[in-house]
Amino acid sequence: MRVIIQPDTQGVARWAARYIAARINGKNGGRFVIGLPTGSTPVETYKELIKLHKAGKVSFANVVTFNMDEYAGLPADHPQSYRTFMWRNFFDHIDINPQNVNLLDGNAPDAETECTSYEEKIAAAGGIDLFLGGIGSDGHVAFNEPFSSMTSRTRVKSLTAETIAANSRFFGGDVAKVPKLALTVGVGTVMDAREVVILATGHGKARALHHVIEGAYSHVWTASALQTHPRGMIVCDDAATYELRVGTARYFLDIEKDNLDPATIAL
Ligand code: PGA
Image (cartoon, rainbow, N blue to C red; front, side, top):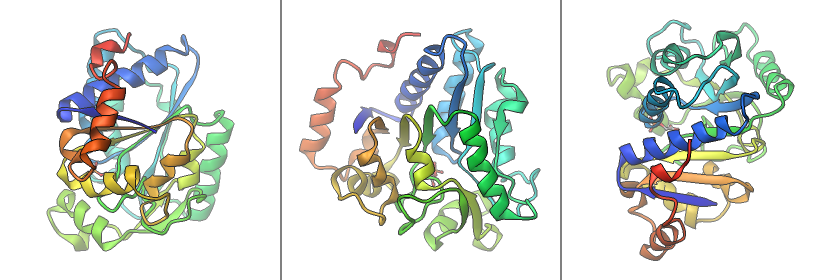
């Protein structure tokens, strides 16, 4: 696993955005399939990608997207639906073909069929080139809460009290308004991507990063599945490293020292 430590949130966003843009450009106009997260963490990265697009450094014309998850039962146009989030924070500002945007339908009459057909759509697109993700304070990746199977596929999941409490900030602080179920890609779905990049910022993620980077491969911290991925990477800020051993943080800072400046990623 690679761990890229940046001084702050802005550094994470700049680094990750340039990395993703370089990957898209590496296809020379060919199709690039990307898995995408919602949440607070990726917002700055989306802003940086929009900036790069507006500066003519990257086009999304041949990018196909698959979002990680969606709340069950929230109207699609609800301000907190992940569909609304993605259009408002990203898709409305880039040259993506709306037909290339894939989002789970949290109101599908048959959620199980919706999840199975999402997996089929990913396969039909040729699999995911790069899955971008965040991490929950409980170590979840997508909505794969603790004790999710490390080989799980897209399905309906119950959200933990910790996740519901964390996400209540988007619902006026009212936990009762947060949906209790979500449709989510599985850990196995994420790990099938050819590359996985997880973003983590702030002290609130420090404990999860400790377990994911230094702990055992374990369904208790589902993002630890990254340990077995051939191309797994965490891009985090200094605050998110506070629970790592000093030696671990120094190791990654040293081994990546020539790669830490976002400007080293050629576009
Ligand atoms: P956050 O969520 O970016 O809003 O902290 C991350 C997650 O729960 O995966």
